[in-house]
Length: 201
Image (cartoon, rainbow, N blue to C red; front, top):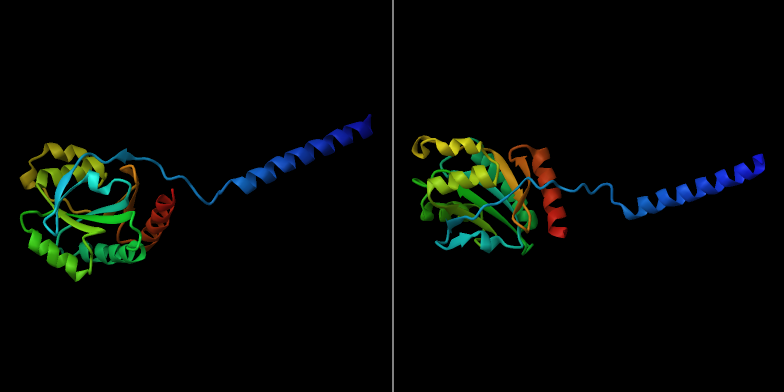
């Protein structure tokens, strides 16, 4: 009886070992699924080349969104230095792009945005610098990209100034999959890893 029990135990261990071996071979544990945080709401903005763009124009493209202003001397230059690294890494990918929204549409006119884009050698094909009404710009930052508290939409828009150093990652279906500190190297590095993952999905 003892011998028989040992045989059963051996076969049980063998089967269990085979199961775990198959699981390890078919599962990529290094690839963690990014969460779905929210969905980007409809938008319509003017691009640096005077073309009106909307969410339909980013369909099936992974993109990173940010908010900045051209006269910023603080965090914006650091943010866009890192954004330029992202741009250079992925600019050959037709299904990836960047959208940089001005937080100061009263000052950042289309010629100024175009000049700023040219200073970064950014192509309007895959790095947009956009403007529009302050109300829609801020509403999109808060409700779509999770870059500020949506409750601030109820306050007088003319008295507000949105200043954030965070980048938002959006997948091909217009879903927000992550928010990253745009001036921290480790978070920008993680963002590039996650962009690669979403492009491959």
